[in-house]
Length: 312
Ligand code: NAP
Image (cartoon, rainbow, N blue to C red):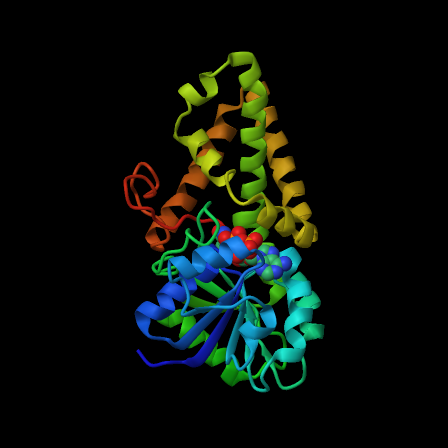
């Protein structure tokens, strides 16, 4: 493939940035990748495993002369990073991010970027419960959606080039309004994570009563919850704090439905339960038909080879 950006700077060297770097290298999409992270330990590991072409010690050094700057830090750290890169950006450069929330990132990052720099926010709907510099793999984005949320007035050429980069890494790229993105993700990702965290918390409380039975007899449903609830605490704290409105809206609806099902169980209303479960089963079929998961009994995630999950 052709080189789309001569120099790409990755701020943060975790799961998403690492996977991007490996994918860009495999597909020859970047002339050079330069990366930095907050801690010396992460930078040392990145250097040791050759995660990027060049690891540097400061954000200023990383973005100097970069054609594309990718903010791949937790959402709560985006503003301080944007503030730091602002004065060092090359005119005409594109800045993007991979944060799981979009409206908040646009509001906090946008004002720190100088005139003449293009800001094209984005979010890959791909992830695993793993984090850190050793967790990335080049196929993370293959056949996964990447949502771009360019604010009104964004340079179409900058958006088109970034789209090409993500498509080059195997992603299916869509564009939508940031607010819409946050609502959709509150339904498909953020609230399910909160439910998983809660369910595992409840089971943990119960364990004190039932000893190790929760672990011993953990069936597929619960095991899947534990996988999701093992996701990075910093990342997910920031997601809920920054996508507060949409998450609260969906949680409100969820609670209402839960009460309806609770009542059906109490009243012995089997018809309601059966109809509800029939409707939800069709949704699962739709996801499989759209190629976003497999029919495998372990949801395609088991076995030796790790496959991308649905986090983020
Ligand atoms: P990660 O593996 O935990 O990596 C985060 C990286 O950010 C680390 O290298 C960390 O450095 C660095 N960092 C943290 N705070 C920083 C700061 N103040 N200044 C500079 N660097 C800092 O996280 P990730 O999973 O790649 O997530 C990154 C972003 O992608 C998040 O915004 C998240 O919402 C989004 N996202 C995640 C997923 C997912 O499933 N994980 C999916 C889609 C999108 P140290 O290691 O030195 O602390």
